[in-house]
Image (cartoon, rainbow, N blue to C red; front, side):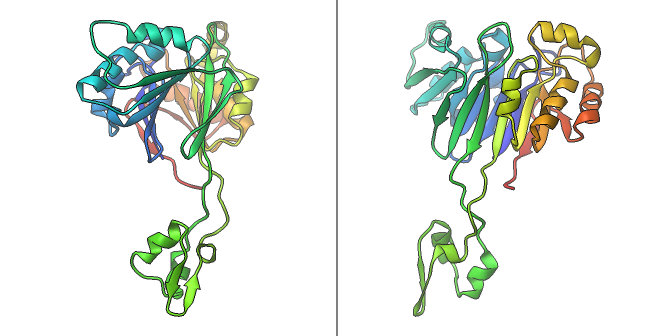
Amino acid sequence: MRLTFLGTAGSWPTKERSASAIALDVERELVLFDCGEGTQRQFFQSSASFMRVRRIFLTHFHGDHFLGLPGLIQSMCLNHREEPLDIYGPPDAQEMVGRALRLGYFQLRFPVEVHALDAGTTVELDGYRVSTAAAEHPVPALAYRLEEVGKRGRFDGAKARELGIHGSDFARLEAGEPVRVGERVVRPEEVIGPPRPGRSVVYSGDSAPAASVRRLAEKATVLIHEATAATELEKEANEWGHSSARQAAECARTAEVGALFLTHFSARYKELEPLEQEARLLFPGSVAARDLLDHLIRQP
C-alpha cells in the first residue's frame, strides 16, 4: 500500500505545489482521491501510472479538486484505455462529472460509471471498503476512509521450513492450500497466524473541524487532513470551511491515528516547516506533505 501525493496546494496551484490529488496503490489497482488541474502531468513526474487508476473518489466540486478530470480521462483515451473507470462523489456527482465529460471534442472509448454517495455510505470493493462522512464545507463535501478487508495472518516462514516446506509450496500455503510433505499434510493454519486488522487511510478533503471527520478517522493507520492555514488565521479559515494545521493535529490526536499528513496549503505559505511545527506540538508524528512524496504504508 503506497501513497503518492500528486498535489498539495490549496485553492490554486503554485510554482511549488499542484492542485489536490492523492494516489493510493492498493496492489490490485490505483485509487485516486481528488483530481485537481494538472493531475495528469503530476502522474508523469511521479512513481505512479494514471493508466492503473481504477476508481476516483472526489471530495467535492470546487475546481481545485476536480478540474483535472477532463484532461486525465482524455489522456486515458489517447493511451488506448479499455478498462472501465468508476468515479465517486457527493450527491451532485452525476451532474458535475457529466458536465466535465462533455467538455471539448473527443470520443470516450471506455466505460465510465459515476456513483453519487451520501454521507454515511460504505462501498464494498475488491479487497477493501470505502466509507464516507460529511465534511464541513460551504458546498456538498465528503471525507473518505479506505480500509483493507480480509487480511490474513502473518506467514511463519521459519516454521514452514521446519515442517519441510520448500520452493513453490510456500506460495501454495500462503494462498490457503494444504501441502503434502511425505506422509504428512501441512495445513495453512499451521503456519499462518490469526487475521490482522487491515490498513486504513482517511482523507478529510476540504473541511473545517468536524466531529464526523474525527469519528471517521478513529484508529486509522494514516490520516490525510487539510491544513490550509496557520493558527493565527484559524478563525478565517474555519469561516471558509477549512482547518488550521493545529486543528488537523488535534483531530489526529483525538482519533488516535497512526500518522498524520498535512495537505491543501494556502499559497501564502512558501515554507511549510512552520505549519508542520504547529501540528507537531499536538501530534508529534505530523508531516507536511510535499508534491510527489511517496509513503509506504506498512502492515502493522
